[in-house]
Image 1 (cartoon, rainbow, N blue to C red):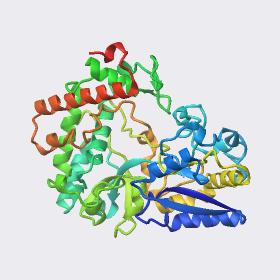
Image 2: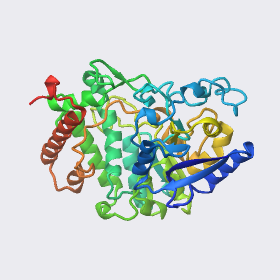
Image 3: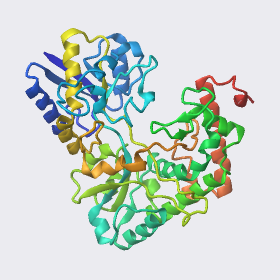
Image 4: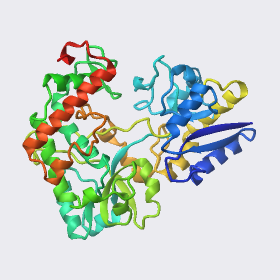
Length: 454
């Protein structure tokens, strides 16, 4: 019997294989289940969403499909019934009585109800987690006399000076959205923490009340943030927003190459400034755990660290909030289409159970920079910091964004390049926030809310 899995290649540019680690994982399943063969269909990154969605809607999807695509609940099998039963590949410990217990509750449905679909059902199984952080060149740090991780923002700024003196560009950067966006998100998340309780006015379903994250901490939901922008409760003149912009610019001046905005080579969503970091020109780079595969050919040892804490040494507005970014399900996760029946359905469930068994999935995780979604797996050393401690917790308040037609880079590019003064930046950013909020109101059909009118 053959079951087919279709999804994008998240680890390399190959259009025919997810790579040897994946083939090894599939082979180990075939060894455990000789009567079940797994076929992998690699879909192009730029069209997989449309392909899978079309297959699901037409009822022609194979046994396993990548989960991050538009679909309706009836198109896929709910997995709750299976998750409540033992995972046959786990003989003892979490998962041996209930499959769901094998997963890290902080990220899966036990502690993250947002993963349930509109019908309140669980429809996906994560093979890993996705996490974000800073890759660093251990050889460069040793040469500069530095020890990772940096504890505070000022340690980072001083470290950048030492890396420059050692002949490195401290932080790789390119013309993509994500470098400035992730940096601003990390900085502002700490400084705006004191406003969370005040702005937490709707839950994640859009009802009046309080929102809480997967960790149980207070959080500002999209509707509450949109209201805060349109009512003036949060503006670009809010002192902590001003301080975040100032610290972002300070970091760019200390750590980023002056020609960063012209770097358009090899833009990708896994490692920012990949060209400069992989060739050891730069000593650090923002990235996600999938980026580890892009660094396998680098001639230096790579490790990872979170963004450092903002303290009062950097700004009197710091109040001790820890750096938080958030790891979670959203990496490699698959669903079973509702058209799969009988023996094929049973075989497909077996494969999902097999890959959520720590001993089976760990070799693949280690080879691909993976962060474990299941208890008992260790994952890749070079990316383990991306989900550790508070850094793996979601930031309770993220800055507003502009309309979808405006890139996130453009929100701060003029400020970072010095073509906008602070006053000009505040005025421009406020206009973008307002237009972005107005678009969200329209898209979410919140027009009848009193605060959304006018």
